Length: 248
Image (tube, one colour):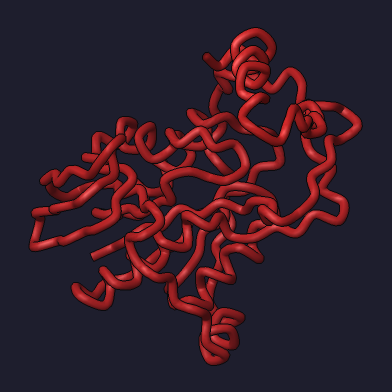
């Protein structure tokens, strides 16, 4: 069985982000990049699937040479090989999905794991778009997964609860926190990752359907206000909530 896991190279969530001079991208100076946290659950599930059924796990990432560091982290966890789809130009979700779909198809992967979303753009649509392009089934925000032959049974999160759905291979699974506990890379894994192959290919070019016009930071948080210390402050609180903040 050939298993693909799609991983993103994203800024660390603890990194202080600054907007670049073009006001359309971030200033990467001093920014620490990591493997997308949701993709770690995808990598772990891909490895567990390989351990159960055998086969090969291929990590696929789209970006520039910096993405090799993220691919190496997946290789250190136990992924067999990596593919870097090289591109220096900005790509929207559809362009990313088209590039991933082309590579997944060429690799002949029956099952593909992705994180439910990347923590930079948070669009949460690349797995679904990729599945649609490939004609694969797709189950999103998965928190429990069972594969028996071609049959796939997954528990996924929905608003207010969970649902259990059944599908079959070929399929794309987007992983949610709670699906598993990602393993740490061992020293042996880190050393062996240096010898594993990362194949470089030009990413498939396609038209972007969206364009970033401007980035700006959210407004600064307003200072707190003390309107009283006993029950007499309640009418004023209600007035503020109704007339100023307009939440009631």
